[in-house]
Image 1 (cartoon, rainbow, N blue to C red):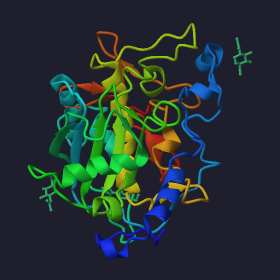
Image 2 (image 1 turned 30 degrees about the vertical axis):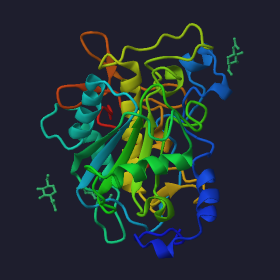
Image 3 (image 1 turned 180 degrees about the vertical axis):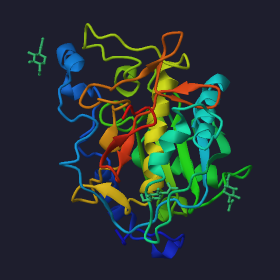
Length: 346
Ligand SMILES: *[C@@H]1O[C@H](CO)[C@@H](O)[C@H](O)[C@H]1NC(C)=O
Ligand SMILES: *[C@@H]1O[C@H](CO)[C@@H](O)[C@H](O)[C@H]1NC(C)=O
Ligand SMILES: *[C@@H]1O[C@H](CO)[C@@H](O)[C@H](O)[C@H]1NC(C)=O
């Protein structure tokens, strides 16, 4: 993947058209992980008893490889762009999740225990992914600068606007910064709810001026909670299956947390899409969180979430953060060759 420009020199950028063609293929890959996508039409029997034998991921089929590119070994700073109307209480839940990644005070099983699996990934020099993830600067795009419907390319223009703003632009840090574009529940992004709940990539120097690892994650609370906030909501077409109660009282945001975790773990281990992924084809990378999507506990796999925890109010979670509980999918552990999380029983 050396054709990607990893420096910030505009002049060395390949033509936009090549980027665009490759880019459009990258995230429309058939997912091997599980979500109740609308085109799959799962039924309740299948969901309750599991449609797959792939418990906690199967090591037989997974060939996760390192492709020599960088991983995020320097202290990671997460910058957020809030796109659309974001109530303060919703922002707070997300900030507290990000602050929990490096917290040393949360009880076990903890978000920082979850991050330990991500830290197992190293670069060419043997340096591990950083233990430290902190919240950086934030930018509000309350008035929807690029409209209520975004495409994969206009997402980059939103990021450009945030890093080049006249007042308080987001800092530019290609080596340690991650940029999260978080869209409010009335914003639609290309393929949202159909094939994706979020995606990550890096910005093109030809559009943004820099190569910055970024992710988009949408609040699915209004558009498709049964898909992207599963298991806090279930799709309409499945009768007889009850959603579980979300730990922070907001189905859209609680569902978003796991997708944010998914994207941050992949950004750290594959920021330029030339480091850790499985599959033969770099255009269709299967990354460390893709392999474990839908798995939240021991025994998980297929449509079964695995063993989760329940708090006194009956809310379902699998890890503690600072002052809060969260339900976060597991990630692939390449040392033992299966999905792992801090609430694993074995
Ligand atoms: C549900 O799915 C299972 C497994 O695919 C199938 O055997 C069963 O007939 C389906 N039930 C209904 C009611 O569609
Ligand atoms: C990285 O983070 C650690 C722990 O938060 C801190 O002690 C260290 O000084 C940081 N390193 C740099 C280069 O900022
Ligand atoms: C760094 O990665 C190696 C290889 O996966 C692992 O054995 C080691 O425990 C990791 N170190 C930390 C601090 O996670």
